[in-house]
Image (cartoon, rainbow, N blue to C red):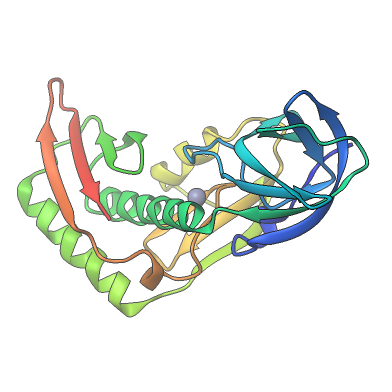
Length: 231
Ligand SMILES: [Zn+2]
């Protein structure tokens, strides 16, 4: 049985009820879950599952095929009804950082950074790139303006054949990265600044991301430029 991914439709859902559809030593699979599994550059959610008055800690969540495995500090039997609570402070911080990563990537690429080849919650790598200090300062200002304006982060669905990217090479290469066989695409759009395919969890508007605390350029060999950021 597939696990219904509640976090896909509502990334602000912190608590939910579910049934255990599969159980093993120190793990359960639920019929539905708000726990985000490790993946797509976002770390695992943590939190608790309560069953029959006992509270178990969820230490790691992983998606294996269509099922989502919750690893626990105890055993819960199959068919048990559970109440899940997400460690919200941890998750909301990841939503902020992940959404900020989208916005920064979009701003840098629009400023002519060259293609992004790696990113994390604190780092963006571009190659080949001629990024300079002026562009860093311009992007920093722009980023903070967009945070202040508090524009919506929009999630919507489209189909591969409905996505007209014209002759935009950046969007063409983004489409090429989506595995063949995936036809329905979940899109995240931050105004005109960022637009990409993503299954992760995002904040609802840019104000929640918060301003940049630092943005630092580090040139590497062979036209690789690393940008370190703190949110
Ligand atoms: Zn995303």
